[in-house]
Length: 210
Image (spheres, helix red, strand yellow):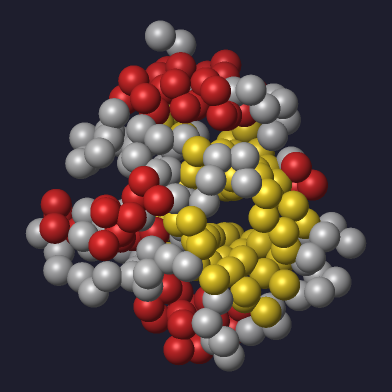
């Protein structure tokens, strides 16, 4: 069966939260649980959520985990790249916006570039893509011809680099090495806004024509 991929638009910043799952085993991972995750609980109920994966540590991509955990029968493994641990423990940059938050749960799995994660028969590759934050990663699922790309690249845009730890030159290098090396038909599923493809952004994204 085709792996399951479902998106939810959550919270005041309209974060895209994604559910990846194997329909045969019902093993699943939730990627970037945003504020307002409670509205997705009914859709999540059939799945055994064994993993919560963060593309990066900014608070709008992590704080939904606090609200989700009490509704799960067991605590899932929580994954983050180690280069974002300091940002995560400092509240995910919420202070930059004058927001006081409770830290998201501490990671129990530290990602490495090139690492392969398994959800039943589904394999997901970790691609380290710093620039928006030091430890930002992409989740590439070849079986779905898709990349869950967080805040690295958007439809006609790229992630902001004016937050602490951001670096535009590094971000553009990450996009060229970790995104544009994939086939043009590859779907790009960003942390905010509509999905796009590698080919479209290669041809149309104004930030990549420089």
